[in-house]
Image (cartoon, rainbow, N blue to C red; front, side):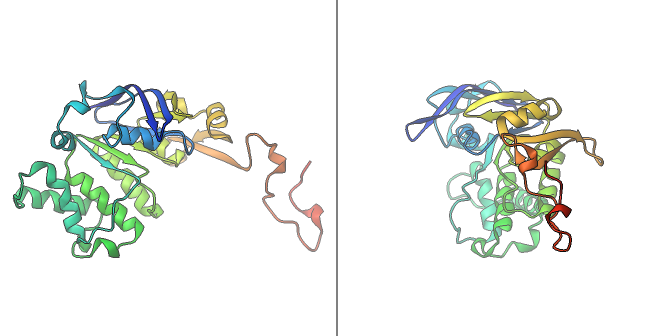
Length: 283
């Protein structure tokens, strides 16, 4: 199934946050949502998974208005991992993941063999199968993130909506998670701050700036130096990754785009023996 937004206008606390957003996450593709802080990414995703109601416009699930579905039916199709990670569940790891099976159960129904298999597979997918009896409250931030992702997997949705899923994860688990998304080939709409991760894992990107979608397309077409300067305020060039051939953004960390690079931080400190002139040359 695919997800698309149709001329979406969203207000939050009396302020317009997203204006006229049109985007699509095609079936079986990973679609990235990128943009500076405050550009409207999380607000848009909250609307996609029905946490917020738009002022106007629609969220369509393969052509059907998502708000026409019952909560249970919507949950069987769309699972979300929001930035707000929920409360400190006084539950075990396994019990939290098993919550993902709720949309498939009748009231007061117990687990069946399918539920147990799905939960076990979800835990194994995120590498938490050895921690099923631990309390959720005992986990680190990264471990909690992986458990909540497993809960979304246990929902067996057609569409995953993930808001900064690599937050709190060390680099190995970031790589594993993104590789897992690639291998699953489930329709996925994901916001990412790491532009190089987005370029590597996503089939298509939508760029948000001041609440509007300002660019859409494959990463190689979207992540151009001019756009990076205009939207993110950084100097950068885009090269081929030496291992994968994917676009790799090389940032100039010495200064933002609105300041000359020679006013940035020197790459080496002046030597005390030779004086300031021995440091990096500044014109």
